[in-house]
Image 1 (cartoon, one colour):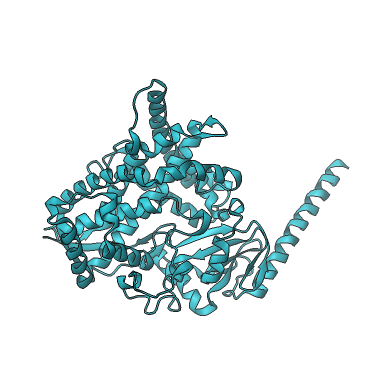
Image 2 (image 1 turned 45 degrees about the vertical axis):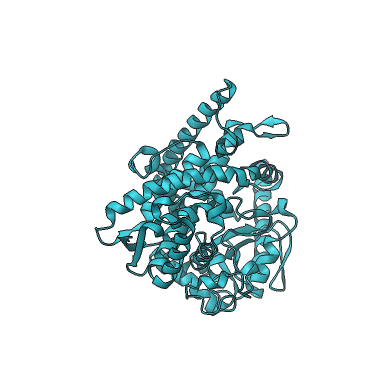
Length: 488
């Protein structure tokens, strides 16, 4: 009798759950255009082939189904893809920032990142954002630029040794540079990724990026069952390696603090030092709290920065007129390459460099799309969409939409001149926007400007093959980002 009652309750719960999902599913597919749907797998069947082919297919859907459309998955799951700037603005500028939540797919990052600033929501997100914001104050960035400049000089030495070897895939090289910068500024440690790319930590970071991408594309990726697969076990091994490294660094720095050992001076403090001095509710952050934020900073500031740098150099190599104009601006500002003394103030004042980087981030946004889960009913495209629905905000498409940017495939830094009357607003969001925008965007731009300036002052860039894009969490090129270098 008891088993019959339990069985009845389970069936009733499942039926109610599926009925509610069916109502939302019907609302979305009846009010938004959607590609042809398989009765079981939904629209997943249209995304076949290699990563570049999937990216190309996804971009083609906007031409067929408009700025906003619906994609479906098994068990009545439907999500809205949005590239209408007005709808994106309404979502990102929701004044109730505490209720903003990332899409469910971001949960695949939690074993590594926990619920740090990227994945947190509610009071925890609000508290952490308040704690971390001072880390990117102008005075702190002044200290960070010294690290960026030093690591840029190491990069220049590596590139000099490759200048006579023909085409160079610039991405892995600047990826190592970005890892060196992020480790020193976030944890105060030197991992020597540029000099020792085969160390356990460096290789584990690179492997983790690939492993996370694989999980996102796996049928069980968003379920706990993934942990039982061989790839899930591999991901767990990498996570343990990275956590052990971060835990060791945090423990050592905290011990220094407790023993009154000097760990930083004013603006030269790193991200970890700032977190060690921070309190929440009158209490210091635990080591686990700090690890979440350090790992998140590592994840968000590493591959994204490398993508931005590599694609900017790629575009400059293919547009010699833009490259020459930038070189002249840098030469006027710094004199010769041997006289370059970069500060936050002087690098931020270079208008054409700023325009070049902004246009590069428009054409090749390091994060091609972001996800949100509605926490309240929201008007999208004239339809009231209920809470709980997942959204994909397509940054790449918005920034390539000809209604937002005429001739969008043309690399034209003048779009971002102070005299331009181009209306960008929420059609340009490479760092997201609103209350949950990228907290490290000033850091990222400073990093990009420092290394781009050093490279252009030292080398004339010549073009290699055209890139073949693939859009995972981070925008990359499946065939590498290849250029040629000629010393100036």
